[in-house]
Amino acid sequence: MKDKRLTLYELNSLVKEVIECEMPNEYWVEAELSECHESRGHCYMELIQKDEQTATPIAKAQTRCWASKWMIVRPYFERTTGQRLHAGMKVLLKVKAQFHEAYGFSWIVSDIDPTYTLGDMARKRQEIIRQLKAEGVFDLQKELSLPLFCQRIAVISSETAAGYGDFRNQLTDNPYGFKFLTWLFPAIMQGDGVEQSVIQALDRINDVIDDFDCVVIIRGGGATSDMSGFDTLALAENVANFPLPIITGIGHDRDESILDMVSHTRVKTPTAAASLLVDHLKQVLDALNDAQDTITLCAQQKLSTLNAQLSAISEAIPRLFSIVKTRQEARLDTYYQRIAHQMGLKLSTLNAQLSTIESKIPMVLERRLTSERHRLEILEEKVHSLDPALLLKRGYSITLFHGKAVRAPQDLKAGDEIETRLEKGTVVSKVLKY
Image (cartoon, rainbow, N blue to C red; front, side, top):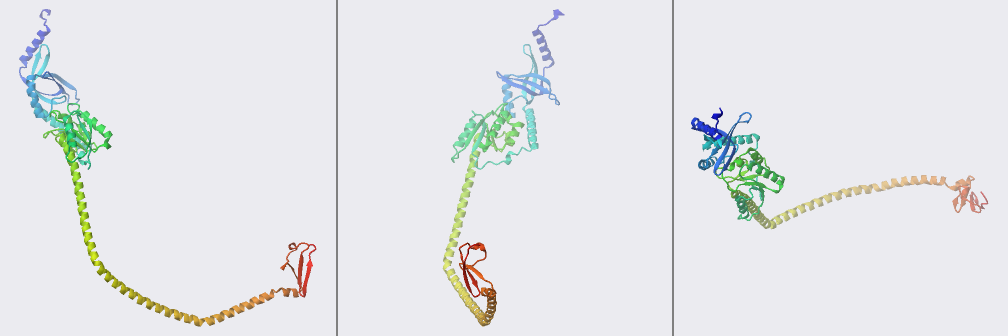
């Protein structure tokens, strides 16, 4: 057995002969790309097939497309699909088995069917659109309105992109002299990092959202094949739910990404986005000018009408004054006659009342005099009954000190001279003690 041993090269050559003899044909194979990169003009791919239930890889294979084929296949594929070959993409490849003594086994690509990939891409796009509509966010941006004075613009773009410069120049050099404030939030605008980079830029804008009126996402040129980064669910959800209107200018006439679909407004290019903002502000200015003209016209018409009315009133005033004067004089004359008549009636009534009162006065006076006379007689009797002389006649005496009646011994002191009145005379005494 040891005499039949082979070198590795001989063994690999044998395998190569078997494969070339048993598998001489080319085969169309469906697979997913897990890796794809170019080197020296050649394209190196790794194909993978996953279990539909668990997504676990169940088959892998190395694939190569040599430069002679790749320079033909690649432009056609990208022109048809609008995308570059990248990991995660499903493809339909025409391959032939090849075994190389030094490099081992690989499948050699001779053709790629772009229509297969287009179908898969379309299915993915439709699934994303369906999911966005099911979530109720697909048209959220369309419900927003650009602010009337939309001048503070947050821009998401590549910092070195020519499109960003074109956008700023278009705003700055607008023919109306409008002033815009733009602030760049740099992001990757092509390749695999688009989704996460743009989302991060939106998050940064959201942190200072009160400083801006809208967001513009622009991409200055670039291949159509770089558009795949704008067809992702996560990015579409972030844009759809963003609280500011988002304007996109990332594609060309025939390329509409899912990002374009969910944005507030989609335009073709960065300069078109700038023109949109300038035109929007011009429309606002025109509306303000129209409103000003309308207000001025209405004011002038109102003033003209009022002036005409004032002139008519001025002309009518003398005539109206004469009529009013005549009417007022007639009313005053009527009032005078009424007052004179009422005064006559009132005087007659008062004279009658005065005559009645005058006739009653003697009787009332006599009655009052009789009453007062009687009252005086009663008072006189009371005064007479209280006359001190009557008390003196009854044997009482009155002691006076300085003309006032003494009521208690305490009112006097030793040496005071007092006067005692009796019925038939007066006695003067001096107090010795009490």
